[in-house]
Structure formats: C-alpha cells, structure tokens
Length: 159
Image (tube, rainbow, N blue to C red; front, top):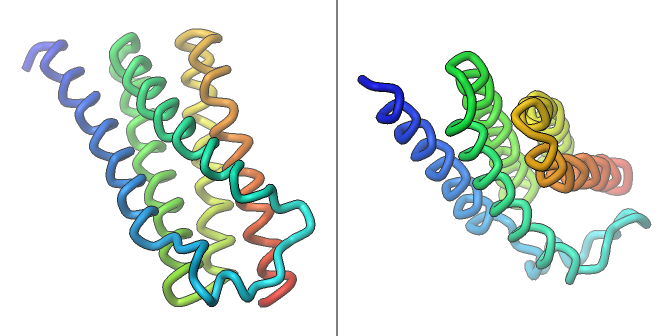
C-alpha cells in the first residue's frame, strides 16, 4: 500500500469516527427530556444557545484538524493521533450514553474526564503539525474540560 492510499484510509477513519461521534451523541443526548429538565444545573452551566454554537464548530474543527494532521504528518504521529482520537471519541460517546440513558452520572463524569485527558495528545500533535491547527482545536479541548466539570457538577448536585 502506498503512502497516499494509507493517508486516504486514515482520513476516512477520522471522518467516520467524528460522524459516528456526532450521530451517537445526537441519538442519546436529550436536553429536552423531562428527566434532564428536572435537574438542578451547576451554576456555571452556559445558556442552551452556546451548545448549539459550539458543538457544530467542535465537530467541524475536530474533523478538519485531524484530517490535515493525518495528511501532513508521518506514520508515528498519525498512529498516535488516530489511537487517541478513537479512544477520546469512545469516552465522549460513553458519557452521552451513561448520562442520558441509564442516568449514571458518576460513570458519565469519569468517561468525559477520560475524554479530556485523551484529547491532550491530539491537541499537542495538532500544534506540532502547525500552530494554526492547534489553535483551531483548543476550543474543543476547553469545551470538553468545561463539559467534564459540568458533569462533575451534576454528580455533586444529584449523585
């Protein structure tokens, strides 16, 4: 397999993983549900419109930055990025399911905290590939950290 074929496959994996992330999160996340509406929210929870702005940006930035890094980088860097990307997405999806389906708030908070940690190497690799890519991915990292803190806030209030 030549290098371009391998990179195309890796970019396809990035795109597929982020689409699966968006779809599965969308299936389980239900902020309009009676259960969610009945929860006392942490005092630092942003207004609902912020979620509608930041998530599309995050999904687009994650897809574009990861795809560019895959295309511009060497094998080891790409392998590390793909491993951490898939693991981080798996933890973020586990949060969506755990929080909104069985309402296991502590499990959800642990999963999202793991996603935050797993995303750090992705951001570092993005910065190593080019500062602009790292900067574009920083809002995703910050948002995940905020979301994890909110998740722990829900644990404190309802756990």
